[in-house]
Image (cartoon, rainbow, N blue to C red; front, side, top):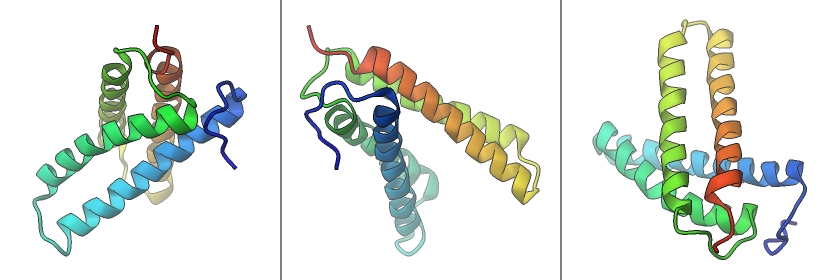
Length: 135
């Protein structure tokens, strides 16, 4: 059971929370995107951009409460989090499009490796800068 009000969980537990929240948002993003683009027929690029933009604030507030057990952060918290998410998305996109080979196992390693690196980078920046207590 995740205790939201625990202000200082141990590093492995906090990273697990961070990855769980991020993974849940990634899965929801993928599923909703597939539904909106597939059966509903919305344009893929616009749908992807709009949905991703909507996920960032929702993920921020969920991370703040569930991962970091906070009710609020300092004013710069959200802009730092949003910029980090966009930078990580750019990093993963650049790596996966540049190094994709067409081989299932090699590409899976590239995708998992870049996503894992982005998650770790996002966690480090978020925990040190975005989710610092207000004041």
